[in-house]
Image (tube, rainbow over all chains, first blue to last red; front, side, top):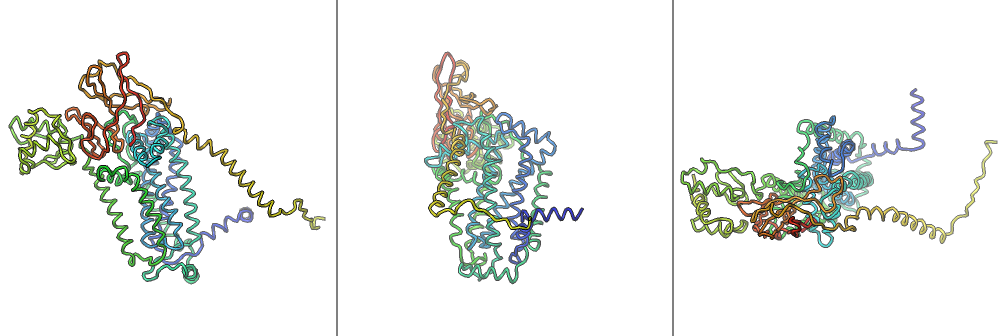
Length: 465
Length: 173
C-alpha cells in the first residue's frame, strides 16, 4: 500500500514538480531574528482566507435581490445552522483584516522594510489596503437594512463630489439615477467577484515579490540601506546566518494565525454579528446612518471640517492619502531603524492618534442633534413659576434641547445651557434666540412673543447650583 | 526494432525574422480583437445605467384635500421604473407642504451635505439632519451646520384633484 502511494506521489512529482517547488518556497533561507513583528502579513492573509471561506458559505443562502436580501439575512441569522456564527466570523474577520493590514503597514513603515529593493511590494500593499477598506464598506452594504440603503446614498453623494466624472460615478454605483432593484446586485458583484479578484491578483504579486526580494532583515541602527551594496550584503547574510523559513521563522506565523482564527471565532460566538437594522425602505426617514467602526473616524472628520470645505475634502483627502503611500518608497535608502528615523515614528503616532481621536469623537457624535432627548423633569426645572415651566416645555418642543444640554439632559451640538442665566443677560439671550448664531438657526419666525418670553424666563432661571 | 532511433522529421521551415515579426503582430492583434469582442459588451453592460436614460414620471401622493394648509408632511411614492424584485427599496419619500389652496412645495429628503435623511420638526419649523447636524429653515435654506446649499425641491403639480410629484434622480452634490 505504502509502495503504491509512493509510486503515485513520485509519478505526480515527475509530471508537475509541485512538491519540489513548494518545498523550495517553504525552506528558502530567510534572515535570522525576524521575531514577532513579522507575523502581521501572515495574520492579515489568514483573516482574508477566513473572509473567503465564510463568504462562500454565506453566499449559498444570501439572495442579492433588494426585495429579498433582508429576509435572507434574517434567515441566515436566526434559522440557518451556524448562520449567526458565520455572519459573526465574517464581520470580525473583516474587522481583523482592516486592523491587521494597518498594523502590518505600520510595522513595514517603521522598520523601513519598504526601502530598496522592496519599494514595489510597498505599492502593492498600499493598493491592498484600499481594496480591504472597499471590501469592508461593500460588505456592510450587503446587510441591506435601513443603515445599508442610506450608506449607499451617502457613498453616492461622496462619489458625486469628484470633479467632472462624479455624477457618472455616483450613477454607476447606484446602477441608475435612484436607489433601486439593481443597486444591491451591483454591490454584491463588487463584493464577491470584482474586488476579491483584484485582491487575489495583488496578493499573488505581493507574495511573489516577498520571495523574489527576500524577507527584509530586521533593521540595525547605524546600518543604512545602500542599493549599491545591498544585494551582496543580503546574500552574505543569508549564506552565513540564514535559517529555513519553515519552520524556523514560520512557526511564529502559525501561532499568530491560530490566535487570529481563535479570536475571530471566539468573538463571533460570544458577541455575534451586528444586529440587522429596520427593513431597507428609503421612505423611512428616522435613521442616522453610520459606517462600521473602521470608517467611523472618517465620518467624524466630515462633520468637523469647516463649512464649504466638504467637497474638496471628500475628493482630496483619500487622493492625498493614496498619494502619500505612493510617495513613501521614493525615499528608498538610508537608515531603516526607527531609532534613527524620529519623523517616521512621529508620523505613525500622529496618524494613530488622529484616527483614535476622531473615532472617540464619532462615538459621541456631539454634532448630531439628540432627537431622543426627553422632556426636562421637574427636579431639573426646579421652579413653580408657570412661565418657567412653560419655557421648559418649549425648550423641548421647539427643538432647543436636541442641541443644548441642561443638567445633563439634551444634545451637545451647541453650548451647555445649565447655567446660561448667569452667563448671558436677558438681552443677550433674546438676541441669540431671535437671530441665531454661527451654528444656530434664527428662531424669530418660529416663536410667538409669549413663547419667547416663556423660553427666556426658563433660560434666565438656569443658574449655577 | 524498438531500439532503433526514430528520425525526427521537421515539416516547418524556421521562420524568417520578418515573418516572425509579422506573426507576432497578428497574434497580438487577434488577441486584442478577441478581448474587445468579449470586453465591449461586458463594459457596456456595466455602464448601462449611464447609457440608458430613465424618464421621470409624475407620481400621485394623495388628494389635494388630504393636506392641511401650512402643514409639512412626509409623502411616499415609488421610483420611476421599479424592477419587480426591488421590494420596499423602490419606495422613496419627500417632505410636502401645502402653502395655499393650490400651492404645494416638495423638499427632497436628502441633506445636501452627504445625503442623509432630514427630519421635519413641526414645532421648531426646521429640517434637521441626524448625521452631521445640518439644519434648514422651513423654506429649505441652510440655517446651520455643514450643508453647502438649500434642500433640493421636486416639481409638484395638481391633476384631477391629485397632488403629483415628478420623480427625479437622487439629488447629488
